[in-house]
Amino acid sequence: MPIDTSAKIYVAGHRGLVGSAVVRKLNQLGFHNLLLVTHSDLDLTNQLAVDTFFATNQPQYVILAAAKVGGIHANKTYPADFITLNLQIQTNVIVSSYKHKVTKLLFLGSSCIYPKFSPQPIPENALLTGPLEPTNKWYAIAKIAGIKMCQGYRLQYKFDAISAMPTNLYGTNDNFHPENSHVLPALLRRFHEAKINNLDKVVVWGTGSPLREFLHVDDLADAVIFLLENYSDLEHVNVGSGNEVTIKELAELVKEVVGFKGELIWDSTKPDGTPRKLMDNSKIAGLGWTPKISLRDGLVDTYKWYLENYGK
Ligand SMILES: NC(=O)C1=CN([C@@H]2O[C@H](COP(=O)(O)OP(=O)(O)OC[C@H]3O[C@@H](n4cnc5c(N)ncnc54)[C@H](OP(=O)(O)O)[C@@H]3O)[C@@H](O)[C@H]2O)C=CC1
Ligand SMILES: C[C@H]1O[C@H](OP(=O)(O)OP(=O)(O)OC[C@H]2O[C@@H](n3cnc4c(=O)[nH]c(N)nc43)[C@H](O)[C@@H]2O)[C@@H](O)[C@@H](O)C1=O
Image 1 (cartoon, rainbow, N blue to C red):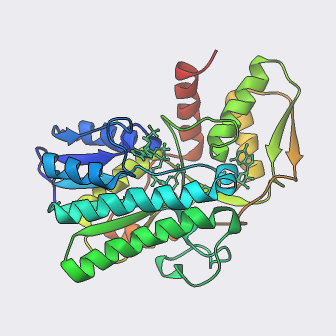
Image 2: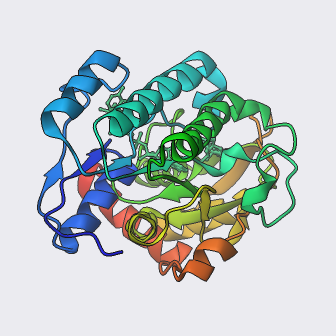
Image 3: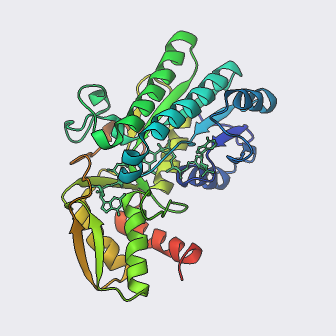
């Protein structure tokens, strides 16, 4: 069902990669009653503050894009933070949304919820069928708990809470931290810095053999609003691009887009993580949504944004 453009929509995490893309999309569509509050004004790990915020502001829709997020190194290095902060943020927001009569909530998980050796492409029903990838199981367990909370509140209280599981994302407002970011922004920055400093080599982590699926965050934002308007059911929904590349292919593509002419060196002391995680997109495709942005176009666009915002 289409949502009225005057509906009060709270986008939690609106300055992040996903939250900012959702806000851009909502603005494009004419939504004009967005509720946005920064981390420093509302710490979502603070239960009392979250509850007071909901009681005061009474949002009608909630898109939960606030989380502790990072790449393989950050996940491995800060397991306590990844499990604790994510459990706190999502529990506070889901419980207060229910308690203060939010019409609908959308929770964002991640493709890392699935077992390390899942059937490929990974269908939604692969959840909880095998052991998780060790580098990110702390984060994955928090995300699985979020899905289960949405299901529990739907079953027990008929609260309209749904969950979307995006694949690896990238785009405007990504995190370009050299160690803690995801692979795509990390490589864009490393190749760019190597190019401007006339270096002849760039180090890339792992063996290059893992396969990953990348989705531009503007496509994800489109899917989030699509699901909010068109899906109300128990099971979570995969959101991917349907295309996968090896990390080696990704590194070659980033090198070409940035225009770096040197050599790639593989650091096999760094973890590869899960060998492959291609999402089965047939559920969301069956509902009528498909992605539009190719990896090459998305990379060119993200590099342009990086140059405008960080590049020297
Ligand atoms: N990036 C990716 O590849 C993928 C992301 N996802 C999911 O999408 C969602 C958004 O991720 P993404 O946009 O990449 O993450 P970002 O780190 O870019 O953004 C997260 C946002 O959450 C805010 N935030 C974090 N902690 C708190 C807190 N305690 N109180 C208030 N705000 C807080 C951050 O604010 P501040 O920066 O000020 O701390 C930031 O605005 C997450 O649920 C993530 O699991 C799923 C699959 C892949
Ligand atoms: C979205 C998803 O993201 C995380 O999982 P991941 O897909 O393994 O994340 P990643 O992007 O950090 O790495 C992908 C691959 O790329 C290789 N790689 C090469 N060179 C760099 C590099 O320079 N940085 C990084 N980060 N990786 C590199 C790296 O070794 C790995 O083989 C989850 O923890 C969890 O957060 C989650 O849900």
